[in-house]
Length: 292
Figure 1 (cartoon, rainbow, N blue to C red):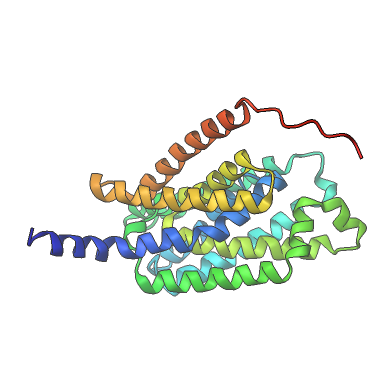
Figure 2 (figure 1 turned 180 degrees about the vertical axis):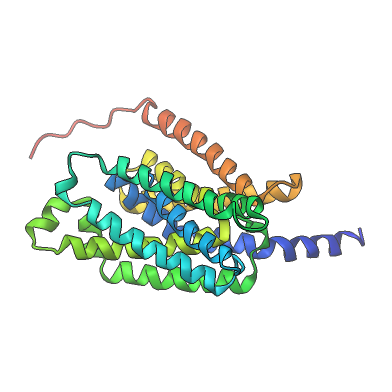
């Protein structure tokens, strides 16, 4: 029994920051995921994440480390360019080509550019793998708190201007009728989204960003059309999937990011089955009420 104490102390020291990240960070990701689902631009997070990765690859090729401030600055610069690009592509004059197709093209070109750039860098294969699945188990407390503070500030921005952002996503026709400058607000939406994606790519990689944004949001929408309920369900799925994936990663000695993605996939299947059973359950007829 005496050896159990140090063992669990070591476990908490190792998993404490990743578990805190799994609890504190998904809320804003799920909220943005619900926006992305409603806008029908499912793969834009993958595209922006890959564009941010190109910035990191350029920084690596210039001799900097992928974890220093230079890499973050390069990633953010490329992400701002991507936000401008998607703001322009959303304009009605491009209606003959589906926006999702253009997003896919951006993703493929950015992915190919990353491969080309890292092929010229030492340890390029290892760096490329890290950009895909990340290294969530190595996240530190300072990084968790800085990221949580940034997400809290971004959440405050969305709360202050929630009417504009929500109307822009969920009732775009009304936003246009009200005279809202949709191009400016779209740019702010994509810029904040790019900042979110850029930050989380450095924590968990491209695949984890996509999974955290889309899978919990889909689970929430499977259970409710209400934005508040869907957000609550999605956040719960993100937290349970993150903690379960990290625990499995530690027990099985497998990459943390990939384990969390698989855990979220399992939860999506469970949510889909549960929502289906709930919707098809027998309902007891209540008392007949007369019309008013």
